[in-house]
Each structure stands twice: as structure tokens, then as C-alpha cells.
Image 1 (cartoon, rainbow, N blue to C red):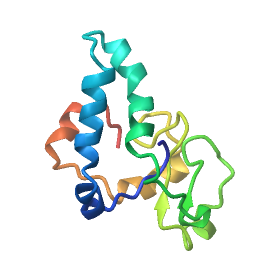
Image 2 (cartoon, one colour):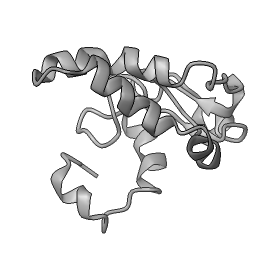
Image 3 (cartoon, rainbow, N blue to C red):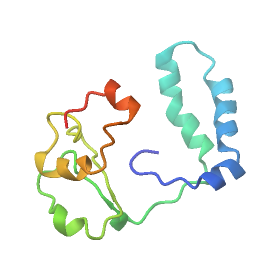
Image 4 (cartoon, one colour):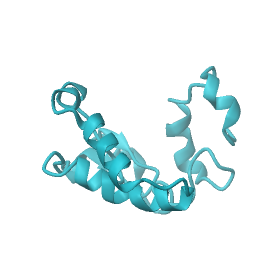
Length: 122
């Protein structure tokens, strides 16, 4: 599960997804080794979300904002419900694509307590 995810929290609770994941973690992630736990994270997620994940219409998300300089954002954003900064040039990094950074900045919560711990270059 990578990319953009939309989660129905009522369904999440109703289907007890957290407990399902924690059971798998206890069963498969019985190592104190961080590398082993990281390696187990994707299979555990796939098993926990099995039959609960549905693809979103591609038109809802504008992807490529972290690697593609050629996106006509003004045209595409009129139909996109979300902007996905996939790729290495995240807007909060200095190497972020300047033309796309302004869209991210609109939603930047600088007063958020966790922002102080992030390497953010607004």
C-alpha cells in the first residue's frame, strides 16, 4: 500500500484492522531487529488489508510532483482531488521542484509541534 490512501475510519474500526495488524506483528515480527521488522511491515500490511483495498480513479490524484518537471499543474489540478509528491524531490526538501512547492506550502501547518523535528525548507 503505497501512494495515496483514503481510509474510512468507521470501517477500519468496524473490521478491527488495528488488532489484525497487531496480531500479525506478534506472530511474524517476533524479532527485536529493526531491519527484520521493517522487512515484515509490507507483508503484514498486505495481509491486514487483504480484500479491504480498492483502487481510486486515477483522475482523482495528480502524481509525479516529486520527479516530473513537465506537469501542467494548473490544468491538472482542476480535476484532481489530491496532489501526490511521489519521487525524490519532495516539496519540503531543498531539491523540491519550485513550481510545485507553492501548492504544498498552502497546506503547511508551521505551528504543528512535529514540524520542528522535520527537515523542512519552506
